[in-house]
Image 1: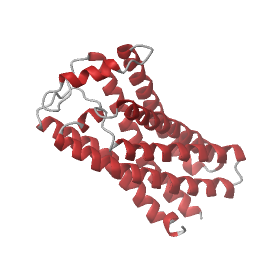
Image 2 (image 1 turned 90 degrees about the horizontal axis):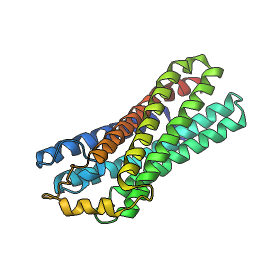
Image 3 (image 1 turned 30 degrees about the vertical axis):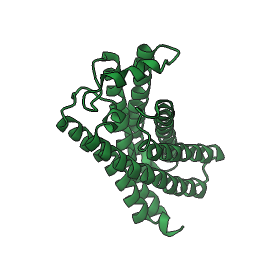
Image 4 (image 1 turned 90 degrees about the vertical axis):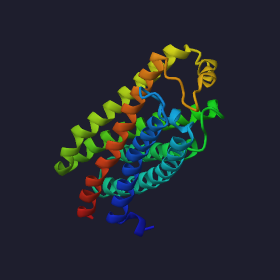
Length: 246
């Protein structure tokens, strides 16, 4: 276990997670476009339907989910050790645990959703997506709050605080914007029939993007995803700071 918590190991896991989370949707989108699908703007999981972009989606997010879950556990334990070593109040240790558990659940759901295309398992897919979205935003907010508390004890962390809160705010805006547009499209009852109708408008596995509200919701999803990638990447410098103090 100690080897998994070494500075270089944690840095590599976090960097790999950020890289796969960034490259997967970009590569998948390029393949989506090369298949002749509409450019603006698919949900990330819409790109799972065509064969080539679907393969990129499945492989990329399966690996991303594993890396995210593992790096969340590693980072969470390192942070907990720092908090205890520096005599930070117990409530912050609990909040840190909540944050990395949320991220682990997001990672597990990300791995799972890579094998759950929405055209085959719509209700399950949406449940998994909700765990990913809500869990990752909750994680980002908690990480930012704990960073702020760490900066109170050690000013060397203060440079991370504003950046973290900005990314957490972007993720929250993405989540709320996506949810608001989705509810406006499907109704407050979240009628799945409106989404299932999209399956009748497939063009060689390309989903029709004629619904403006859904394209807007997809835009907010991409904002959320981008903010989470940057948040994961921002953890690498913190690992170095924590390692220097051990």
